[in-house]
Image 1 (tube, rainbow, N blue to C red):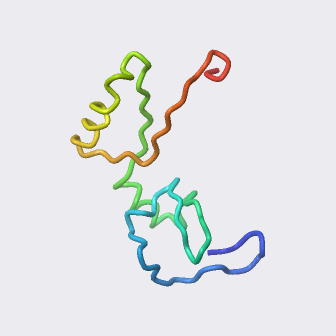
Image 2: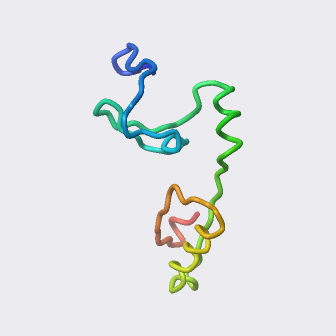
Length: 98
């Protein structure tokens, strides 16, 4: 891993206790040696091919009329075998939605 700010190698291949392979996906935030890092891309094509086959990214929006059923909807998603990595609740106006 290369530190762009300090222009030097930050991390070589080591084992990090408490960090599992499932914790590493695009968009994940992990703490390594007291530094909070965000996974933004795969290191090489081989890694991308191996991990992207297991993970896909899907966007879902729950409309306001289903607000009362959000818990049931999320339970159904988990019961179907999916995982939720990012969950964001937002209120959009006409100005922010365009």
